[in-house]
Length: 279
Image (cartoon, rainbow, N blue to C red; front, side, top):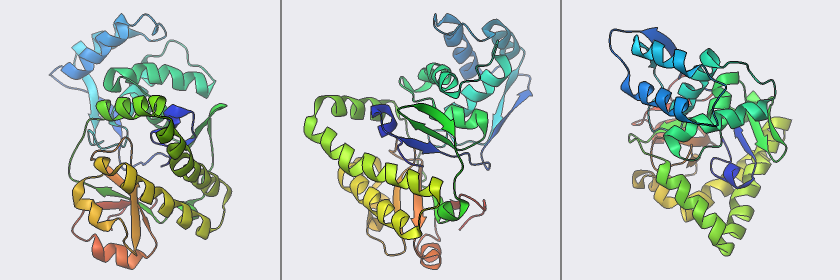
């Protein structure tokens, strides 16, 4: 929801599960080569000694794989779902501390992204809203009323987040002016939004901060928002922000006027977060 990049810079992040997208274990007559490569990566990693990787590789060789409807490269946790499913089935002994579990999952997800916060897989594993901050991560309650105006907008194009994440992280670490801007115009509204949706603050606070966050992302991270959607950056009915790393996939929208939003976006595939129906 919020903090998609800044969580890597010690900012807060909030993610929630979206049950329309999921994966389950099935057995087929063919081997999933990508899952086999993942298993070999896990077995070779010296740090990952808490998984039954030999059993995983044996099962994958025998056709066990994940049947998933999570779209690849869309910012809704396709790789996180895989990590959570493998962890849940093959962990030697689970860790009751969610922060430790998140670090384990981040090590696993590095196979897909090079660098990972571990947030997507921990949300998939717990199937619960997760807040990450300087103290670690924990399950939190979110206000359904506060989040009902949010929806996912399908941009129609997948993306790879590897270069996006590493380049923004490098810029944050080397450019002091950019770091100051990120803290003020990206981290601050994200943290205010997280507080608002987890403490039932008034709707005006959410609307004001989501507009602020959207404006920053269009102005400073416009290259991560497909050009087709730049026409909506000052729309009266709704605003848009990144979902995941950006560059394509889904965008997160917030409807100030639901009827107007439905009319303007009628040609696009979109989903409300809480009633799981298309606009």
